[in-house]
Image (cartoon, rainbow, N blue to C red; front, side, top):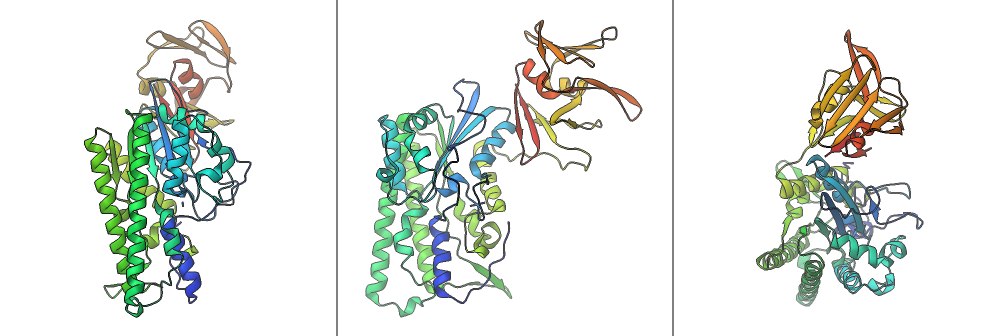
Length: 451
């Protein structure tokens, strides 16, 4: 589910059918190693202190963040990871746990959550037969951890439901003209779609009820179902590729019906006091399915651009904005964000042996820390509340509230920048000494420092 690819017209109706079905049900299976440790965690276990903002992601491959071409070395950068980073941008001491399972249906998630709520172990086959996700034994079996993480969550992101329609859609010949279907065939499809929709809505209601029981204070953010049928525009006219227009309209009508019922469920739980809202994934993805999914590679999980679009919608739903760092110059190795605000300075950030260094006055100013300097000892004293950190030029140790510690970095140093003498200090040592939370995000090359 994570490269903009153009859709290629394929002549084989069988291949087309399989591609579109996979797109509709979000059930592409990743060749991830069974030895992979799941759920995905940011910095260990989800934190329990109230000052932390804990994010838990639940659902299928969309929740996991699967992207076309994943291998056992791939790590997702889906909605959960992006929203975790946005929480860091908001100044939170954030953590996340991703419980997305490839191929999971809504009934399977309900059974899994029921076992967690009852603090009972459960086998993957009892959750859902035939799950191909190689991590299922590790991730599903640990219901105690799932229970704890949901109980401590501030935000639960839920993406589930696409796989529910597998049995119907896998039987369809998408190129067959809708007008050639007999009345009986048309009615049978309609009946199957309606029954599956009702089942999905029933399971969704149960899932939300369980989450409400486990954690009444958590924010729940979810998304409706999207139908990324491939379309092209030629001479101002929009047309489908590889899908009969009449059948496409029937499927779009079904998607509209599903999302209408989905909306009603969300409103029902909102009226009961549950803090829940959703993004319109249908409008977001269907506005540019060819650009936001990997449908050109026979896989319509969102690509990197698609996940970013969905993540932007989630962030705006939660915080009213989507934050990002400024483009970096070629000589700037990474960005530093302190308490949600990027440190922008004429003095460049330096990366030495994998450690981040900033000009002393830049980092202390961004932190709101007090600063004094001793020319005699070449020592900077930085204070916030009851924390005092002392950093000495060239010293391999530093002090926190008078106690000496070994630096896990090169010492602070003086250097000339634009004919000015500037003191550079290791950001992590100073931040942690002052009791700040530090997290490095390698994909965006950003260091977050939050109080």
